[in-house]
Image (tube, rainbow over all chains, first blue to last red; front, side):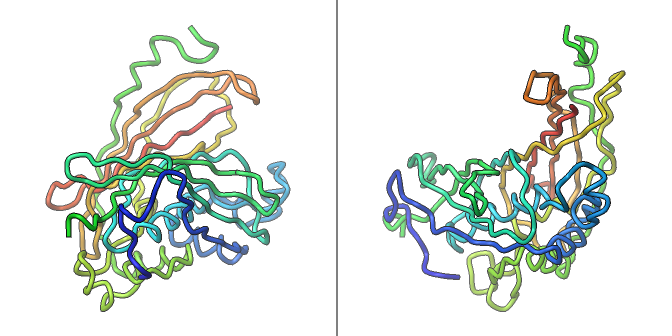
Length: 145
Length: 149
């Protein structure tokens, strides 16, 4: 629970504080258990190789969860993540850092809600955006306090 | 008429699964947050979360991945390409999910089409899952894109 950000604090082009993750095979096992997704390509290397993968890969849904964390961290306790959209375009492997980033693309007030729209993405340690997406967040307003 | 999908197959759009209801356990919410390594007290610490406007712990946005539909509505298409890819998800969040909630999950086929992609003809199926609490409040919608190729 860091410092709360307000609608008035941000403008279009504002860059959201990046979120770094260093996923390991252990984390993939934890996520498999917590989410119930036991597809073997995420923890069984032989199975992954037999499926023509370079090794075990991150669950798309884990990257989705990382991007959700990027946005709930940004929204803070007073904000609310309203929409999130993610597309799995590329594979990511454990043992490599991934970074979630985002940028505000629009701001508006609608029905009393102070809304910001964002482009978000997860990039690998080569800087490739493997998981692009968008998000809509409702932020608190200083004016409404 | 496409390679795999004809007008006749559009009848699958709208098919719904039988509902299934889950009790949301505090420990499951915490395990999910721990698996993501999200240390936000809202998802981990009841004492701290009580001091927020939520008045207590809530689940991380994608926690409902754990609450699987009873079955994924079948699309019975002959010769559907065997390889399956999760293309991503679109989410809408309306109300928080809390420990002790009873969440009912229904899945329905929201769209079915085929497109030409890098990997040849792909059948793209959008399945919409709706997660409703014990007060009939729609908490979350997830629209998941599955690709056969």
